[in-house]
Image (tube, rainbow, N blue to C red):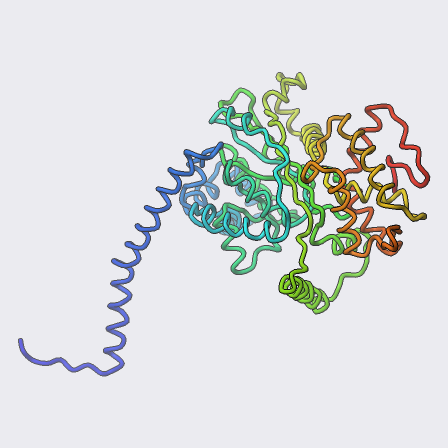
Length: 487
């Protein structure tokens, strides 16, 4: 019993390593998981008491369970059997393919990361770049929603900052789930997006099997009450104007919707606008179909941009990029919308074509698009493309335009409730970017920057067209181009 056992040095190292792994797996890791799970549960209970829309159980279900439910959903199995029969592909091969799609799509929501990490990061980032404002919000309407309603926030797509801005401003109301393109499937961004409840979408995929898996997941999320955020335009606006809706995810959401079911789908329109969109020049190059910049050029310009901002901050000369504003509109019940269309008796056929609903939602988004200082100044500057003007002339034009827009019922965010200051903010932004050239108090438009000027004016052009048409008014009698229909 007292005999010594000799081990080679390498054997001792292996023994210690195996023992350490066993202790780590059976004692340390479970303790760590228990600690974080306990913190997460306390956080969820606390958050649910504060949120207008509570976190649904579906969002808190383990990812592996959701993947299994998706893979073996009856509609997924139906298309697997159909493809296996028509194309003579082994069913096991198709199931493995479905499993790959499901793992790619299904998120892994983590309340601690979302409400502690992502919210903190989003708040710091947006406030470092913009003066963030919530224009108005129908919070009482959200609070009055039936708990069985599935809420979908539908918003215009101006910038990649939309994800961050909406996450920050909606965090006191709910936790949003986004559809994100394949561009974000890189480490560690991919893991972060999944933990925030986002799911990845192959936007150009024509694979019917993938499309069915994606459609079923979107419908499962809606049935589970997960608050979702959708950009009906499907992509960033290249020219600054509000785009036409696409029917992809929206069509998935409403396809086969039964108005007699216990769960309603409620759409909340969201309007977003910025005094400066960080990607504006890149988007304009895409709109003008100019050649793409070389990767090295893009990287060098990005470094230059970051370095310039750091240097300006050190010198105390850095300005934030104006205002970023979000408006939350009145919710639209899908059941009520169907009743208004008088299609109760043929509801499934009606919802096979989601275009009427998509048009209605885009109109509502357009109506609450925030009117910001830069957009107002850009609209007036288009009229003075070929002649100099003073700041006094600019203010007079802006006052008149604002009165027309507000008379039509549209909302403008005027910083400090001071229109003079709003004009100053817009003019300063354009002079800093060399869109306007100032000399002795007289401004002229830099013709080389006309596309950028039109880009920002386009963000509220639909409101201006509507305001003039609704009021049957003639354009303001000034020299230069008129407001409505200005190219």
